[in-house]
Length: 181
Image 1 (cartoon, rainbow, N blue to C red):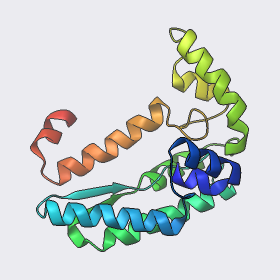
Image 2 (tube, helix red, strand yellow):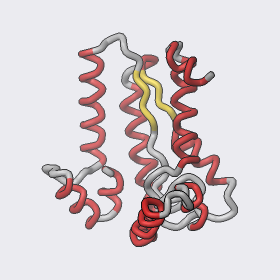
Image 3 (cartoon, rainbow, N blue to C red):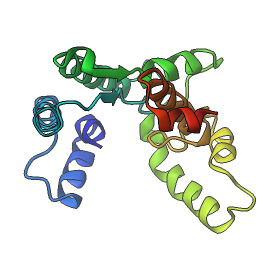
């Protein structure tokens, strides 16, 4: 939501009002908040391994301005994570989705197009859910990993889960091994 708020002024005002934020999110605020969160984890749980996921695309058109902002936010995530060395791993969700989306023949709809569509999609899913999955609704509008330009569909969610479980397994977390099997 932070990057979404930065993308469009009206969305920023709405997000700030709805979430009672003292200010509209900015990249500087994103970096400061992420730094404070990791500092807190570092101080309170010094032996915990940390994983940060880069943000997924905002809309499936990788050349859109919205995804330039996502790339900028992901650079912040990578830079802040790098301050914690081997203790912090950045899981490249955006890069994974970028590879999937580059295989599509055409770019998806820009994120701006989805506000009216998301209302219809939510009605279809919640009222006729036995006929429509998020993947099917996504396919109907030409999307591969996102339902409405912002939220992951089932395919996108499974990709993120796979990446996180792979990290947990590589980090020798026993519970993750049971989940992966």
